[in-house]
Length: 431
Image (cartoon, rainbow, N blue to C red; front, top):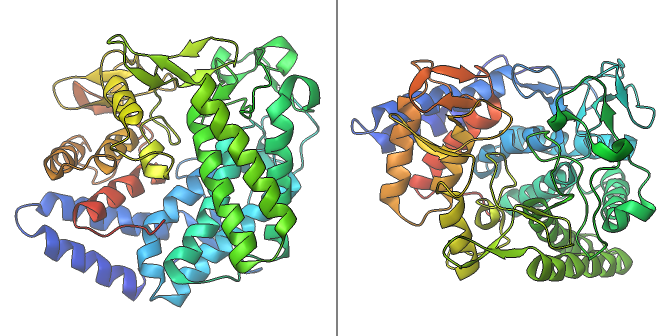
């Protein structure tokens, strides 16, 4: 069942943030109170089987990626709130149930209704599947959430038989997609679609060399990759493979999975550091957003996470790492074709939304990957100033006219704002 009212622990936490914000940042606390409660009250559904279903907001389906990001800011509270921890554990269990059904799908139905995109050409879809765009990050996020739940609460019941089966599917797909052209069964085409919604070459995507990185058909924006090695998603894969190592050595006892995860992670990391490096216009070494392993690079960043900007947020790089620092400067400049600046805001947008629309997700991430409190404060001020009086975050917002925006109900953006407020006051999710 959905939450009928805000849990006491959540209300107490909202009150705590309100007190920390005080009169100086009353607008932050107002938006925080609304967004932090909104996700629980409007998107979370506790099902009869003990699992949790989380819609994205205005789309009535559950994305493996979005659902993880939507509950992440609740993790610091979950250590002292068993009911909240139950909700998150239930989400992990449902995510891994879905992975065992179809590890190539990115979004799922609440029940096996068969609701999907009817004109997609791909392997026959399960009635559980809403959309079957293969996005590497869709496999990474559930592993991340399972680990973060353990790190922040000590809880281990999410590591059940379905989790183990799901992790084996995750490893199998990541490993298979290290040689996409020769080993992968996956193809995807969407008839009469924009180029960003379909894959070329009969649904196989543009050619890639087998170099150790693992292929992704689509970005976390659900847009098709230009080159099949999406570097930020590969970085995320390295991080979650290290989580798999720790889970199956510290909590579960399976040395074979530990060895397999370590080997794949090492192969991907080596390939990133060898084949995903290019230079910016100042001649500094930076990470490319995408590559094909054959010398072609896409220098850009997208608003959705994983992004190059998020490499420090996810745990692949440190903010002080020179290559990450140079990459960060590059993607937060006009060298990134999706970086926009205007009268009311500046930040990273996406080919997914109109030109000149910056994403609050990316603005919040810019704050979360900065060590400067002044930067965080400026971004929070900008975020509350571009909500068009709704006390909610949106998908994309026109940098010159905040009344023009996409997706009035987008829970992931709401929770990224909340996480930045929490971060500003030193309340952080343990990794």
